Image 1: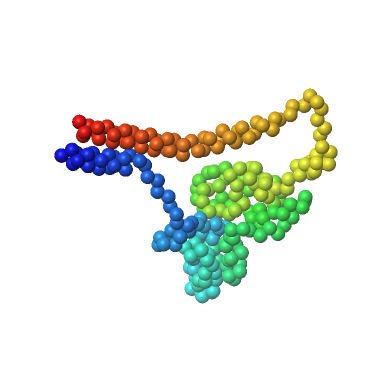
Image 2 (image 1 turned 120 degrees about the horizontal axis):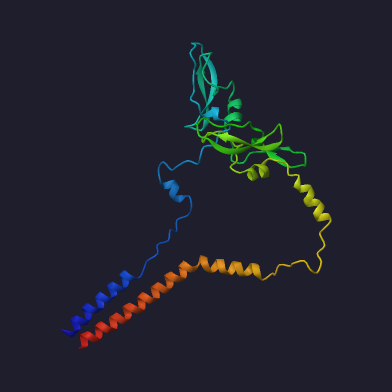
Length: 248
């Protein structure tokens, strides 16, 4: 009878131990393999060179038949359609090359223009401001190729083009000639001499900040390990207690 009690206590304690210890499941699959197995995976956000590229193909009201090209936002390609010869909309190009140049945006635009100070600018910096086709009212910045300055404009909230920045600094870094580069060169040629009374940063202050941040980042891992050790000790003591109780 005592042996049966000990066996029951042992099984119960082991089940309690397995139930208390948290299990961590890690995904070992490589990035990109899951997306290939899931049908209909989401495509990356669509980027258009101009908001007119989002308009549907419109053959117009006339009855002639002309071969034209339009950009299809569903297939993300320039496609052929038949144009009647009048009216329609601006998503209408004589050649495939014109359609692709206006609407197809590559992930890495080719830099082909230099500014006054030798800085290369992406081609989207020379696009006109485009508020898009939606009716929102958001403050954005674009590079004005006429004034050669980043200026504020109102964005509708969808589509538009890449000459569209949330912050003035982003626009200036990407498109505007930085006159401060000359000042930086002058400072490099004539470094500022410091006297004995100038404050000097202590080299040990920066590593301390890194140590604190590293400790905060790993605090959850340390807490989880301590929790597991505590549960194992608790369950072991409970097992010993039940064994002694069975002996009695």
